[in-house]
Length: 222
Ligand code: SF4
Ligand code: SF4
Image (spheres, helix red, strand yellow):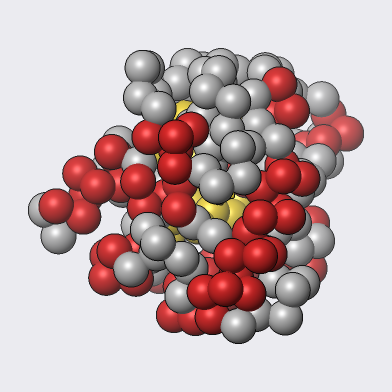
């Protein structure tokens, strides 16, 4: 995975999740690719066309990466499903049956921040994610069950939609309990229109990525 462009990857035990959400597969492979630092430095005010282009490019690259990984596992005799956009639907801001970020927490890659994005210690939330479901006996990482947001309120205070309640995530907490996805989506459409003339359907914002101290920690050293 790393030789094909992944910046983070891990294996997670999914058996604690509902079988129907994970296609009865016991293992999840999580992969992440990061945005270029300069792209994220430019979105604290409004989203840019460049950020949207990279959003699409990383999604495309991740589709290719998990397709390759699933084919590799199948060629070794295992079942494997690449959770590409075609497979799970282009989820955007709203939810899917088994979000990539849930697989990522099971694979020990990060936690779900107050803004409902996957946050990593290394890159903050300036990443895109994808995943593979498989029955291959891959050694699972220690899952992340608790948030490391602590008392931080950066995304709560910065969110123009008021979508971030400030409540901390822990494993099993439903997103709706701490985050207002419809409010985020509505505001993200407006900000995409203001930022780069999007058509009112595209919903992308990213201010919560740009203000996260974990993202800023990476940007400072890159
Ligand atoms: S993407 Fe924008 S609107 Fe949505 S939670 Fe983040 S800051 Fe708020
Ligand atoms: S900005 Fe702060 S509260 Fe929000 S996800 Fe990052 S660390 Fe968590």
